[in-house]
Image (cartoon, rainbow over all chains, first blue to last red; front, side, top):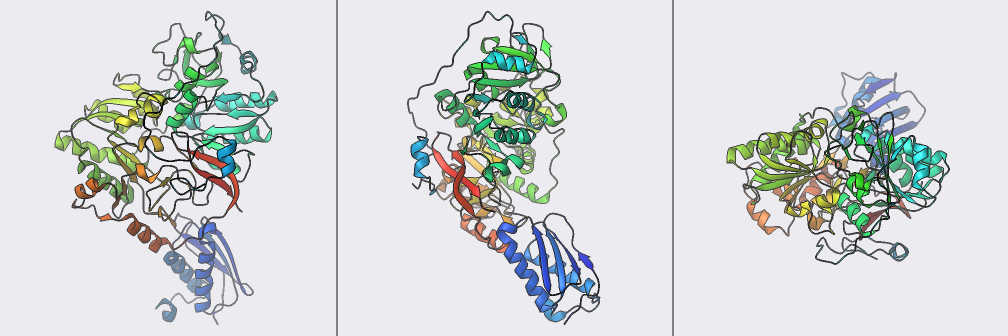
Length: 98
Length: 513
């Protein structure tokens, strides 16, 4: 299991981007604020929770502010935030990335 | 019942509001009757009135009447809010609001008027922002009626809109009501849409901050049409009427679309000496005029006229001699508005002349090439310019349905905007039927309406212009953004979308939250 060591941020509030803030929590809690909530809210939540599961992160509070990012952008930003929050910036998880 | 673009139109609307469903883009040669308006005869003296409360009293405004405004001041309008506030203050109820369109600066006041019971019905070209949100969430009991600029002219002539009192802001007027929009502090160029109100309203009130000596010329609105003239402190904010200097886009996606639009035009049979065109005010449309200019010079081709909402780049083409005449119903920027005073070949036209389907021939019928935008376009080429990706009202029909009657109608739009696909299986709201649309141009390539076999032949081997079917473009968009969940609506209509002949092409229902 991967542990969130401290709060970390990745991404911007530019259009077509998503900004993640990961902090310590109990269980997986995802707070999503998305411009495309009605059409893609559930899809975005699934991308987030699937990726957290792949990293074996069980306790985290995720704050995501989405400006219409595509799934590939969402994954890239979340991986960056995870690596920062878990102090694994120099040890990428090749199994997940592969 | 289902109409010809496969939209379910509730039977009670057809029955109660005496509507027919949309059938065809062909107008044909029906016989029609124009309605007359009442005239209170005067010798022209004593039209000057001191204040808005006084003039409201003089017009005899009563509960249940229809009032109108124009939107030529755009986001710099002071007149609408001034007049509407006074009408609310005086406790009027159950009025129909029938402006040529509603701009963002009017939104708060319209909501206030609805909540006060002052306004109970609205017809407009469109609405955006807070007001669109308010209406889409069920803020008004009866659905708003949305009409194109040409259809509004038709509706006024046919009596579907019967204006009791028109409150028209003008940058200048003399004491008898001769007015134009090319002199004064708050110039907006063409008075196109408001000319219908001046001609057909029972009572016509002009509001101006600049009283000119009699006789004020050129007179777009004439003393024969005007009941009262009110002097107010300021009719509008010149900086917000039109955007300032038009900047050409540097967005590579828009430039690529513009370049492809130009390729489509120049490889069509319509690109020849004496052709005519209409471009919009969007980034890509403006860039098209730059590419088109180069092609016109290179091929020694001149246009007979440019039509519609006019921008400075179009005026530049006129002054360069590449365009002979501009038929101008509205000006989008300061440069276009200001040049109307100097260019006798920039002809002001009213919205009937521009686009009315029910007169003896409108300018749009003479149009060769037209470039229009879209929020969505579907695999049947139907276009939505009214509802956003959340299903909420956030647009205006404008001249979209009207200008789409050009011989070559091009929709320029990116394949996707952020995570929202522009090319879809079914648009949320049908505004302009696919029968009017000939070519879609996106940054990845173009799709041609299958019924235009002539264009398919003409455009099949143009370098840098890949041709796809519209289904292929739809799938390509979906591959990028994913499959959206369908929007949820209640079964209560909040807006009726008329086609330009007054038939119903679609309805917009209240959004579910």
